[in-house]
Length: 147
Image 1 (cartoon, rainbow, N blue to C red):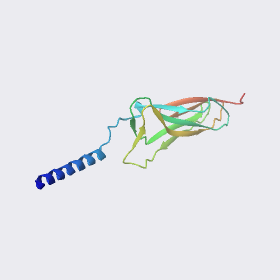
Image 2: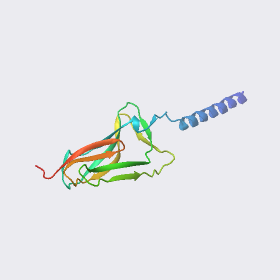
Image 3: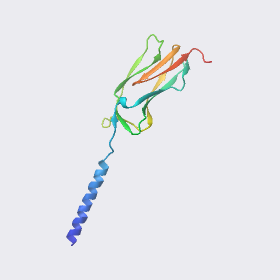
Image 4: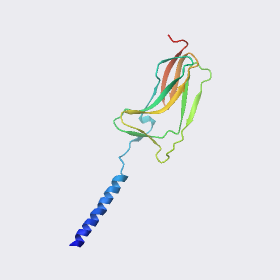
């Protein structure tokens, strides 16, 4: 009788260990997408700036869906932040070096936004000032004098 109870105990222990190992290795399914599956929002603290006034634009990755999403890592992207009247507009190419090559995904929780980039801006010409980054676009206005 002791043999049967030892076998049951042994098999129960093995089964329990397998369940524990399986649950540790289990991760919920991920919705993996691309930039087409999210919105890109560029925020500026104000709509109008004085010429030469420095401000920071913030680029957000926005997930308006009720499900978490992971998007493929962005290895390089273009930033445009200049006055439309600038005779020599500057476009900056940014190459991204991801420290964790085993997990090259960007996580964006459901119904939220995460900061992707901050862009320092200084309007040098009057009129519209545009900011473009990874498909998001916004404009501010630069004026000579603040009223």
